[in-house]
Image (tube, rainbow, N blue to C red; front, top):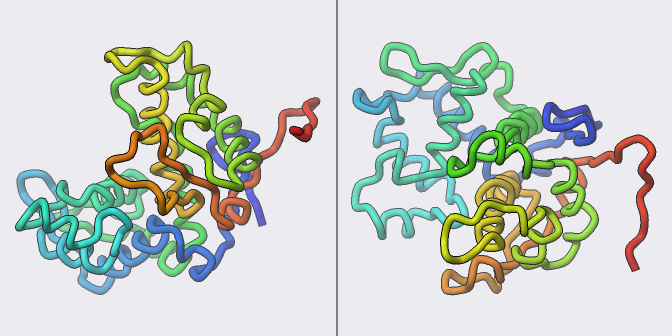
Length: 255
């Protein structure tokens, strides 16, 4: 069952997916683990200085989440002691859950709200609200809101994923399909194509990967150029997203 999203009149989401169908979504899977942790521990203590999750919770999450690219051995290779800012996915989850009013800060602890208690166990609904929060607007701060909105045509970008990413595609190719690259602001020596690619990687590819609807190629390695890295949609994409067309426009086949 699909419902209209808050993202676009042409983007529909399915909040009815079950836990096993969302096993590839780090956001839905680990977001629910975190909510259960809040419930079972009577809340999460917060640091006085930043209002971040206490170190004990961060250490638990690092081992429990096994977040791709942020496994414990990687996190501890950089920091001997983990605080919330050292584990970016946890920081994003904290920000999202608080902004969505699923948790709240009260007397030095993060607690479930009424909405948070109602969503416990409902992985499909949690996936849907995370998707609407993560994709509502680009998170890149280097562009003005007006410029960011100009390039953020989510129906177009998700439509390309739906129709053209059944096989591996480089970030460079996808960027040129998704954005008017020649119009993208270029502030550094690498030019507008690289800047546009970073915009797509940070604001679209990362959230879609964390939602489990995109996957990175096993051929991607740290030394590879960002624009040469490959990704494709997963089977979850078509189960979770449905992309409509504006009235009067018909789908065409590409040969």
